[in-house]
Length: 129
Image 1 (cartoon, rainbow, N blue to C red):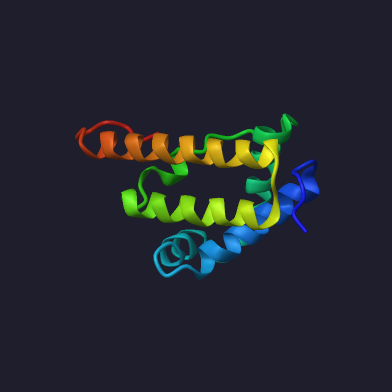
Image 2: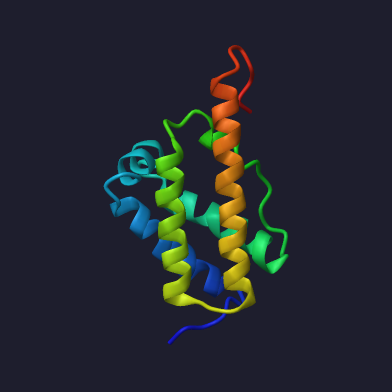
């Protein structure tokens, strides 16, 4: 049964299902597992608050999402896979306005992160944060 995204419990389902796919993915898993290691519970909690803030307008995330990704060995292919898994996960669990918004926002974030990473890689001496 497909539901709509209404509250934090829905965000938790989405985040848990998505990051389970990421952790087991042959392309993304080694990068994420290598960086996060044993801190997955803390990372998931941060992602719950991030998406709760973005989709539910309940301001619980107080951070800067780009800097932790800035120095990762990410290329366009990684963002494409990330988006594919995210869209797939959203579609498996949810439909409706918030589901569409989640996919739209994820697409914009991936685009912005990729552009910023590529820009800073090409600018010697420029801060990534």
